[in-house]
Length: 116
Image 1: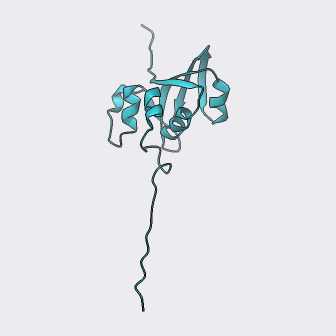
Image 2 (image 1 turned 45 degrees about the vertical axis):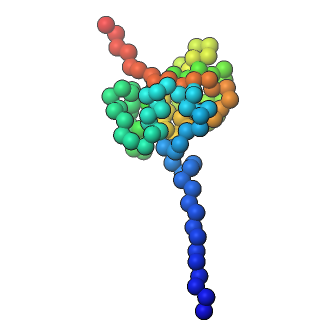
Image 3 (image 1 turned 120 degrees about the vertical axis):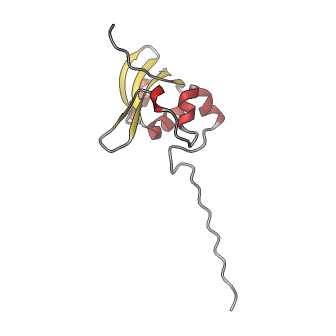
């Protein structure tokens, strides 16, 4: 009887939002948001982050894009839109999808502002 070998290849890319970013995706993100994809535990005090009812974290972001409807079609909860500036709260999985859109130029960390 001959020995039987089984080779199993597993690709984790796309299975997790925390995969490696392409150079094009990385260029669209500001450095704090890039750290969310590094696989470590970034200091979340630098983000406006909330926990959704399903347990996922949602981050406040400012997106520069010429097409807010394209974001909405992905299921992104768009906050406000002023010309090419769009605010939103997104999960890492949604953020990954946003980065793949050609109309998206940059994504920055959002912040909470309080009246003085």
